[in-house]
Amino acid sequence: MKASLPNDLEIWDKFRAGDRAAFARIFELHYGQLYSYGKQFLTDVSLTEDAIQDLFISLWRTRENLSQVDNIKFYLFRCLRRNIRRISQREQRTQSQDIFLVSEDNGHLSQSPDFLLGSDEPLLTRRLKAIVAELPKRQREVVMLRYYENFDTDEIALIMGITEKTVRNTLFNAMTTLRSSTSLLKVCLGMALFFLLFS
Image (cartoon, rainbow, N blue to C red; front, top):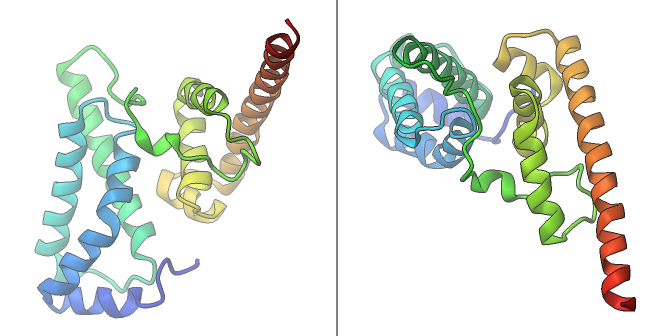
């Protein structure tokens, strides 16, 4: 498993020894990514913030008992996903709605991932966000972890608690949907441009 930063081991060891600056550094480096990941699945932003706060409180309280970590980002994502799942289950017991949904206001998905080669049209990007949001929950999460957060298949499997084969199959199904949808969009955009130029 690849390390996310060259000095992850050093920062983590200092944090485990009680170094507050190292703890603050971990927070600063990863909070934005954790927040972007969490708000894809919790419609209430405050629940995302709570999940991240609980994660960091737990880390600090149990730091002396934590094992060595060579990829802090991976470790944090895996822990946050467990927190989100726990919060989601708790909320579902008190509400009839499923909160494990994509938020409409998710700036993170406005970035163009690797599989959108050369497509910088604003309309296409907006439509792609909508298509990704319509994917089944598991497909949406696999796409985000792979193309937005750059985790490998084995890392995604560990974060989500599924097999690598399931990750590959889920990713294949999601990409099939996305590619067919974006191909149709490109054709439609081309036709619209033709009519604008020649009408």
